[in-house]
Image 1: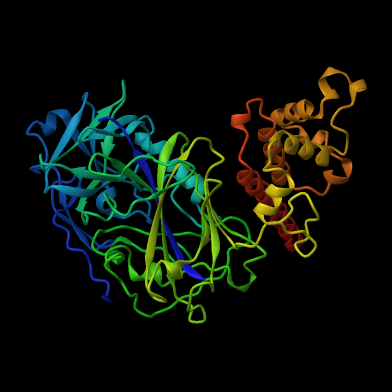
Image 2 (image 1 turned 30 degrees about the horizontal axis):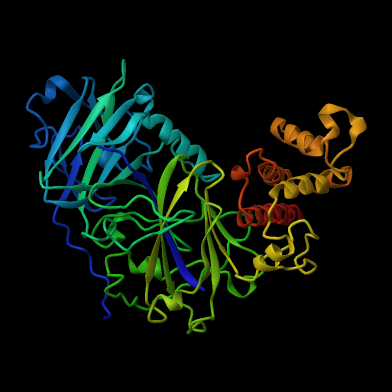
Length: 519
């Protein structure tokens, strides 16, 4: 199989030949320890951080518009630098001014919210871009702690974290960062990083593939991005010192892989063969030397990552591939589908067609608009795996149909309404219409939608299914049927999406049964 790593970016679209991986030489490198008066060396990341107390980046009235603060208690897992000190802003706004060269920059804001900052809400802007609005670092950290903490491991209730943005600095060669407290509140910051990056690494890079649309936002000099996820699939965490000169961190993907089907984790120690299209600074060798693979059982399960995101925004997803398994050595050996946000990104992905062979890395960019919270999945699938989702749940007994066969059999799915009725009919084991039941229950479609909306679908399904179907599978199945019954035909999902959602429901059921057997 192929190495697979991912980078997930949130677009802030406001008006306003072989080489060894050598680090990129950044033209601008700024590490600012906010609230500190002296330079300090961080043993955790092996970097020198300058204090901002007498910094040239601050206005001369620093002591009247802000003050420094030292944490009363620092969790043992939190590095002292830059998190033991902070700068607090209580005025209407406060601006750091950084003279930098023209070009794209990483901007990283470090936060360690203690209980003293629970009432802190503020906004952050940079060179005309709104980065954070009425932001609570305390609530953000609490969410991270509750979502990603490991059971049984003593971790800080409110951890330190970093918000990373990508900003293109134009001819002014100034990067302004403005903190504005919300009314009756205050702002704070523990550390600021500014690192330059290669001109075409993210901005004006390869033309991305737009999913479910012909055009979309262009990531150019007028765009700002926020990095949401940067994952090392199948490998461990890569700290900033392990990156290619840009101090990027890469998180292991264990917290995001869905269900028990986590795949295999092949590893190689062979050097990666970087190219002009995929330069040696694109990602560290460690990223391409590890992977998640579906192996020889790829037709029995999917690899799925659940990545929570906010709805109503465009996202860019960068997928990294590199074949590191010797027995896969030519085109056609490994072919798979890629789904992003419930949409087909690649029908038959074959990275050998994208590279010169084994050991050569490649990346692909995709842009998708997320309009609802259901769209948060990245999934790999064997190209011939398409089960009849309302048939027997055993893969060995399932009938298999290609999408084209299904379209031909249903006249191109001219009426998804039938699927919605049929879905509830399967669940409830009753006809679509029973006139004598009265207005509320006569129509199975309306009754099913009502019960689904109230969260009581379990009350009306066939009793034979009640003790068998997993609750999460039932919710997803009901969701599919309800969407197919939308009054506006244009709002009903495309058949490709229906097939995906039904298959996902089936996977939820299979995972629940697997977990039940293991208890």
